[in-house]
Length: 239
Image (cartoon, rainbow, N blue to C red; front, side, top):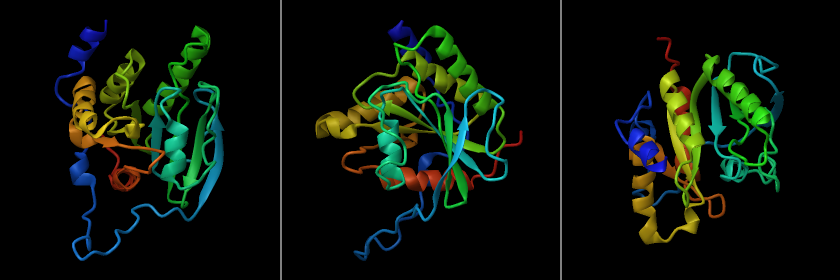
């Protein structure tokens, strides 16, 4: 049940890699009133293709990758659009669960962004859910170029069993994870700090890994971008 899941995931943080505060670049020039430099300026953005089944087509190896994962209605497409400063980079579907492939994008020809299918949509058959599960797990387990995963959670909702299974899988594989808490603009100022603490404890991560974000206001975009850049620069764990 829910309480048991919460207890199971509220122990020691289980993400590999550095804490987010260690990943963040120093904000030089801020005290002098200078405008902070965009940590991720998007110069080139190219759709590479989609992986429809485990072991199927994927981009050629070589560039570091980062994957975005979350429930089908968590606001992933909207946040990705905000991150790369494009209005229609990731399709914002009116039908949750519509993305059936892992979609790969080349960013600045320097790294690959992988948009994983949204999970947890109730109207999808068990067979299809199982198929997506194999696709996502196969990608995460068998990818030496993958530097980490950005796991999205809705600020207004407790993590679901599917969310918690994803955190367990990432911990088992040893993949670094950042947590983007979406729709933070929907919470009052008083609710926000406590909510981040609660979500971090629920999923067994430290608060430094949690980035409050809003696709509407743009809050958290630069924090997320800076953390991504640092994560991508981290050498792969060959152990």
